[in-house]
Length: 601
Image (cartoon, rainbow, N blue to C red; front, side, top):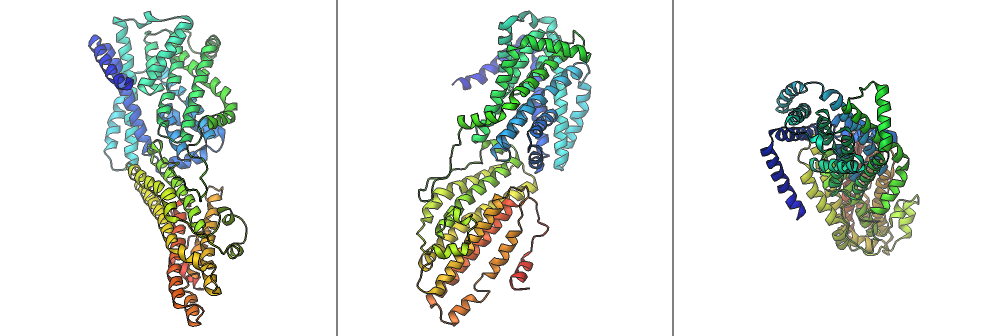
């Protein structure tokens, strides 16, 4: 109820303020233009994803100092710590980042956001930046009408920068004009009460605008125009830091447990940093004066001093929290547990739910693709259990170093697996969620991304088809795996062995900790698949000709050989999509080469 009343109350309040004062209208318009600029910047940076962000994140966050640096650089470029926070939550939810790396990025983003204060205080208030804004807007709009995605992205970035500059200009002009009719500095509050009151005001302002950067620009322009006191401006800056966590919390509402943990880390960090700044305010003020003196900042240049303060207390916050990251990760793991713990035993089917696809990862195509890839691996993990169970084997047997041939011959009694029931509980819900999510994620993707999305959808279909073929194959495996006829028993055990070997090889690829896993075993599996085709290699004809099996057995073996062939082929195709990092493997064998090698060429 309160949320429904908040927007109308805000609009009515703004309308009344505009009617009372044209200067407030100019200030509010400046804030609005500034926020539009930030949205344009975000749109521009999205155009340069297409797999680039994924590669940059993988290579820039494998060490804590790299994560910290990535947060600083990305926030400096995007001029929005909130945007970087939401982006980080998105990629963390997709499984692209670890929580410790994500926290490092958040810490770096808080340092990076201080660059905006320096730019505005040192440049924006001293130069007529509106003169720079106009050409940026013109060139930006022209580039947005181009067909090239990169040019469009550059156009959005230029437009965003132009709107940012224009917004700062209007805020500065509005506050300077406002000073002639009304003096806000008369409402300054000193002491601890003022510190707490203006910290709260800064927090609320940031919650409303969803941007600490916009709040800081507003504070600096008001301070430059003399509309607020220096002491109150410091408190507002602390509040802006605290308020920016709301954006991360909102962004994490649709995320999984990992995304919510990162939002919690952001909140804890900013609250801790704000509390340190409030408790040690006198010491920070002294540190600002000392730094300003040695940096050549004039004694009455309060806007630059505010930038110094903002930088100092963020640096201190990072210095305090950085050694505590591991403890913070463990604490958040206890406070925000996974919604779905380890998968239940196959004999006690419990409905599986998606673990990686969620609203938070829809923001960026790269994150959405990674989430779908991870969810498809989750789907395959469930399918692995079902196929293994239908073969009469266990996961730990297949993934062990034991000889699979001996294992298959030892376990000749294959229990019945309720594949229909297992499919309903372990596969159908996740598969449906992936397909529905993929249709939503496709909007805004590049051709390359859309092609990868299509391949992932095919991989999901391959997994489902493999399970359906396994269902058709299952009855005769149960019947003939312990048959009295040694020849038919041997052929069905060969089918079991072939499927188990396929699961083992894919499991080894999945377990590889290399950034680009070796996929050459997939080509070897394709060759073995052709060699094991009983119609091609003459095995079936030999069994029939020598009257080693009867006609009923022959028919079953021919049909089931086709099912096994399809299962292996589909699982190989699925693995190529999930684990391939490049569009084309240089050493990959084509179909003709595989057939030639399989036939002894």
